[in-house]
Image (cartoon, rainbow, N blue to C red; front, side, top):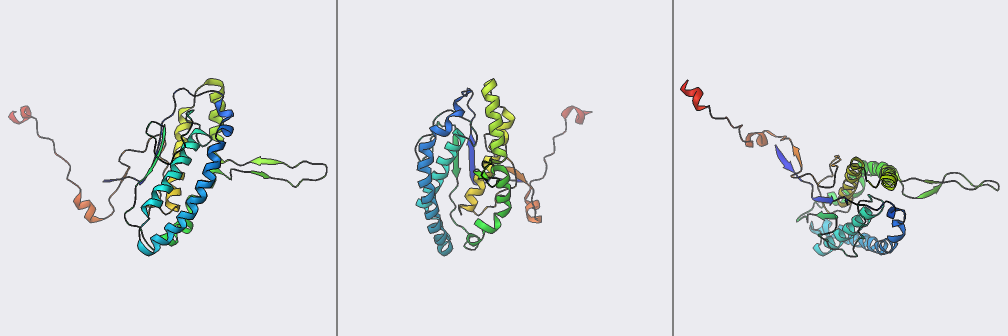
Length: 255
């Protein structure tokens, strides 16, 4: 069997000592990042449209645009990891598109030398629909919405639709508040869902033709060497090396 590694790498390391109460104000501390990211994602969208036509006519993703868009995603992942996508660190995110080696959250995407001209027409909306449905379960709407019509004698009712990630991070935050400890099992599961989401984001952003796997790779680190993939053709089977045969024990030969 061969190993297959997905070209989107999302890694993180959980802080050993997290503040019990800092998470209560991280929404406020992260506001400068949210403002900048709003403009960066607007640029991401515009540049992705340009990349769409470049891929359609040339089969290549312009490298300068690719590096910028990866930087936007990397910045967003660091902020999400600090804030409410994970709450995995208390270190304030740096204001940069570049990778910061000593920061505990990293995102890298392998640059594709060639991309399909035909897939660019359908992968970001049609082929990605199954993943979008899963993402809606993982992350929900992420907004406050009115659930009932307000009347003269009744105030409107607001509901937070955060999805599974939001619920698990909230539970972890409450545990952290009272015990000073982030439950490792919840952390692993939350990181797996975030990793899934960034793989889908890269695919929908036209940055890879490799379809995101329906696989929850949990934990802070990407699986080394990828998951094993069974050969599917006789040629692949014939290329597999035969199993080694252990040499007989010398004592048994003499006997």
